[in-house]
Image 1 (cartoon, rainbow, N blue to C red):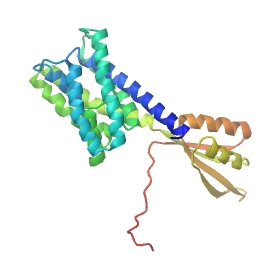
Image 2 (image 1 turned 90 degrees about the horizontal axis):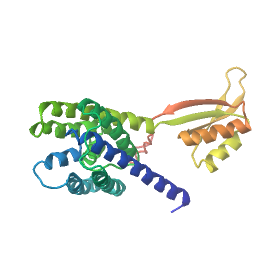
Image 3 (image 1 turned 45 degrees about the vertical axis):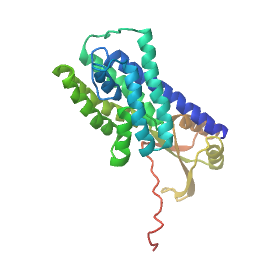
Image 4 (image 1 turned 90 degrees about the vertical axis):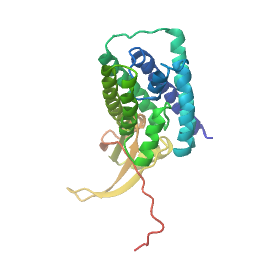
Length: 289
């Protein structure tokens, strides 16, 4: 494996680790103290713990093993490997929190505030995981399967799969907790979509400059990115020019702008936000005209 690929793998697993830590903290410090059954695998484990004499961390791990098999079979091996890593981390972090903060009580003693805190923190964690083609296990795997096969946004899939679990909490806790859990699950899916949209934002940069060859060389050999060259004609003086178009992330964008500013401060640059990129392969069976 090349050096750049190793760096990418290490970066992704660091992001997955941090995402799992955020998700675990949200569950332990905001969901569990007030028995909030916001739709998740941990919520199922929490409800099962009322009549199964096992720690929530153990029940969560058992549930994850079952759903992991489905994830590997239906979504793919890469998703399965990353989710195995994340799904081991989540109960591990939960177990660590159980040891460090036994019998933890709510910081606010207000279910509504706890739900808001949970939604924000877990939304950040789940968005980081989904952005790396991973999940924390549990119902996140179900949401990923729904997103792939039903072609829906991941946040919508998270909401739909979680609402069923949240609604069932009415059989274990009072009506107020059940209603808050359902609302929390719904808005939690919206937050996940919002964070994922922000994480996936890239920039489409168009540059016109006399130093275009040096800029293209920098894009190809330093940023290791692809680019497109277009022949254009200025409307005022009818002078033919060339323009380079490249799609970059935030870090690459800063490097590119620093380089262009250094070699040609007067370069003409336009920048557009891009949230989705798709490649539609040609249909080989379709007759060509």
